[in-house]
Image 1 (cartoon, rainbow, N blue to C red):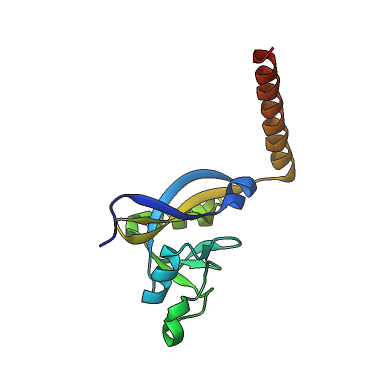
Image 2 (cartoon, rainbow, N blue to C red; image 1 turned 90 degrees about the vertical axis):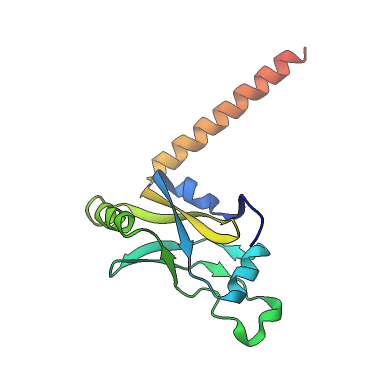
Length: 155
């Protein structure tokens, strides 16, 4: 088994920019041997990926795991649909929220916990363009305030 603790391998920075994240859930990922080796090397990309519930099971679509260099014939399609493991109760809860309230399941990060690959999913609602602008304006204002305070303290 690998080292104890949690090590983040890849983050989906765009998720926090494009969505309001309401809740977060952790799920295991069903992988092949060469895929886990690629993930341990940090060769995974969450851009444009999403999770969906189909027939009571949770799947992730569009997650790119680069082929393992020494994997030759054991490598699989880098963007194949992968099954996620979660408790049935949690999947049922997420199914209700995504169907009724219009939430989306967005992958936030891939990490290793005790040697196992896990994915952090966010229950998210899409941001409108004006929301994104407001967040950017607030961030710029805070940056300007910090700069002024720093400038003032050095005088």
